[in-house]
Image 1 (tube, rainbow, N blue to C red):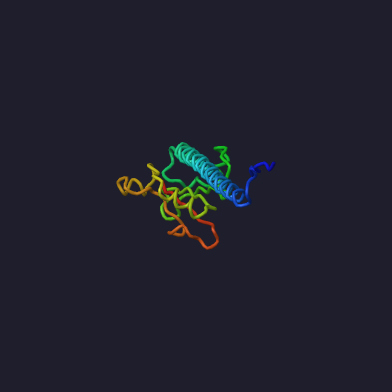
Image 2: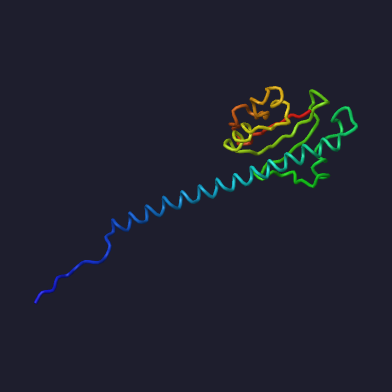
Length: 158
């Protein structure tokens, strides 16, 4: 009597297919985590910018200009000089106009630079002068494609 032999194992092709599908899912999950981390970092930058802006305004009450403003304000506000993307925050009087100051964010990748450049900084000079049609930030270089990867964003305020 010959018994019917039923194969119950998996073929090599089926196993490779499963591994490929798992790889695609893993890549998607990693990208989703990176995106979430970038979003959280951008939120921290937003919080830091608000604190820096408000701190500069409060510390300059009674002055006719911002000549007393520099990076020491970050220490006074207890804000780290390093931004969440690995670059630095810089604060200084606008060298072209003593009645303005600039907050600079350095060390940005192209994609993060583009996102921050497009964001609306409502109290910034660029936003106010454009009637709210432009974000108010400028990038260095203009296209956020620094050859050394060190893109910068500058936001000018009154």
